[in-house]
Image 1 (spheres, rainbow, N blue to C red):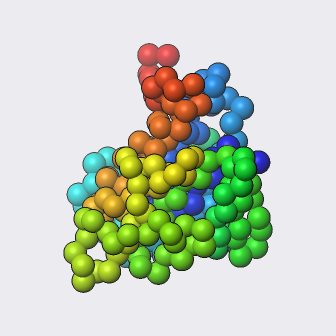
Image 2: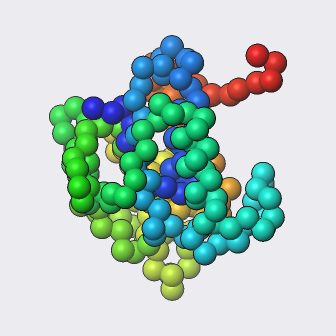
Image 3: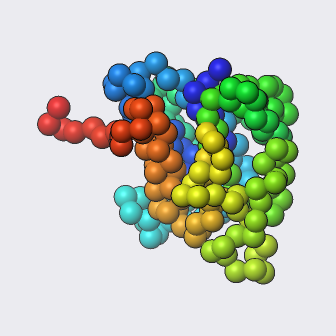
Length: 202
């Protein structure tokens, strides 16, 4: 069983995985298992050109960012498991965690983070009961979100990015994923606020 199973391969999902992965030196996080299922085919970034995102060089394509961010995660925090070429079809709550079913395998997790896009085609069985109209998108786009309270959908079930009801901006989605990661780190730290930073002074 993995401690955290992150569904998605865009800025929110990968940002969440990066922050969780970077906390491995902390005693409360050192033995935690983190899994990212990086399904990117439906990402809104596939056709994006990023000229207005903090920290990203103007002219960077969304497609390149999707590829580079996964490489960054894999090279910097290789203990984070990345699953490619699978699609989640079902998330079922168990007595102690969740069962995540894909088109190829079944996984078990204590905590799930859903960070796919907000398309109305969202159809992960077990999660559709949380769907509501997107609160920050114009109705004609027909986008949805998962009903949540500050990114928490239900016990140990988080949502991040546009699916959390946030505006469609790369920097907002990335920050949303990082926020969810710090919420999970805080849980691991017995409820004491926690985050993960590196420093050139260390």
